[in-house]
Amino acid sequence: APPPPTSARPPTLPIAGNSVDLVGGGAETLLRWARRYGVQEGLHEVSMLQKRVFHVTDPTIARALMYDASATFPDRGMSAVARYFREDAAGFVNTKGGRWMSYRKMGTASVNGGALDRLAGKVTDTSEVLVRNWNARIDDTYGRENPENGGVEVDVADASQAVTLEVIHEALFSESIDVVDADDPDGEAATLKRSFREYNVANQDLMNDVLQMYQRFDTTEVQRREMHRSRLKSHFAKRSDERRALIDAGEDFSVPKDLLTALLTASDPDTGAPLTQDEIDLTLTEMMVAGHDTTAATVACALCALCAAVEKSDPYEASALADVVAEIDAFCDANGGALPRTTKDVASLVLTEDAMKEAMRLYPAVLVVVREAEELGDGGDIVVEPGPDDSARGRRTIRVPPGTGLWMSPYVYGRLPKCWGEDSDEAVARYRPERWAAMRENGESAPDAYMPFGGGPRVCLGSRFATLEGKTLLAAILRNFELELSPGLRRRMRENGGELPVTYAAGLMTFPEPLRLIARPRRRE
Image (tube, rainbow, N blue to C red; front, side):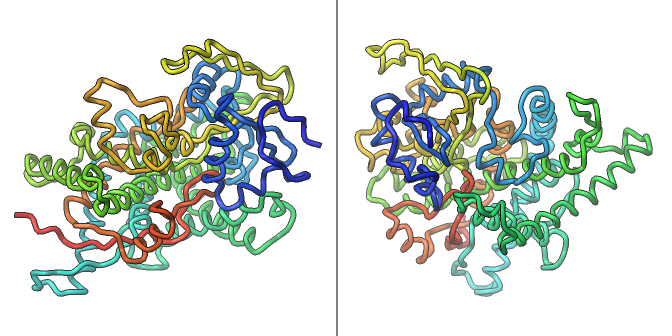
């Protein structure tokens, strides 16, 4: 039997507990639970296959947990995100202590510091290839001499994934691979993109099986997942073999200083042994998923939300797209018509970043951040200091029993009215990038409720890279095209109460259908 609840809990089923409630993504369920069960104490209990979980609904508690109590709750546990990769080997997701720190240092070096400056130009170049491809489609459809070229439907999620996959490949392997411009459907670049997409789809199907029966049977979904996983491993193995040959040759000047080299030359901090190929493969897979899927999802959501806002009656919402485009045009005009290609260039696009932030507030790429109290021992305490709006409650201590999981949802926090100065659920669900400009003008920092990259020692190591990449891709698209919702997406959003048609599998954002916009060439004076 599950342990008796220590706080409010939704009704449970025998054995499954609340697992069935989260089938199909769980975002709206978590938000509904937060509003119903989490208001009084700032958290409530959930039962997952007889395991106790605290769903933390107060961002102040979440911050205390991730920052002040990070040493007490350092481990994510084998969360759904870890099971997503279906591996027991080491990697970013399912390690802790010295091994985790070793992996984190290697990953951080691959997408920060000097690497960030090097990759900035790659992002611009790849984005410009996407622009040329869309223009070519328009020319092929309407003719080059037609001054009133119409638009074509583009899947902005798929296009963004192609750009970000190509860039993260360069970051990890120091090797260019033409994912955006892949002409041969059976070529290496197209196969890599297809395998990642199918690998993710198969994982999503498997993770919707809340009783985890996929672990016991050789189903079609398992076979499909393993086929594409093996293709990804072959891609990694080929590059690992080539890089080992360079390293063994002893010519340091010819060996790229990237994540692949770092992994191949690293030692297990516990045993001193070299990392196995399985450990290397898993780490590369995690980095590639985290380094391109999440950023692509943010860009796609930002573009769709900006286009949807144009059609709103609220003048602040309707002007958001025009404000971002004006900022991009002003930069490019002052830069001889060129797009940003350095970290300094990208930093000047403040309103563009606001558009990304607002998209991440409403549609974070990761549904939940997970921590866990150790099974052995006494559990731990979360000490919460009162915030400016909570002084009457005073300092309090939350006791977490051993083995208890802890969920913190950026999706939920982004939609709590009290955290964003809104007076209703409807108001906080509006896409309003200008709220970030208002915070700057008032000298306010982002509220605790804003945590799309997590927080504390385990904060996303690629947050700066993701921001640079997303802003550059947005600039390239909005500099060159006028966008509007496709009829299909407009209809789907209307059916969905104005929300974008996104869902989550294994806690990661996914799109059950293409996010299609109509792109037309911009006619700049």
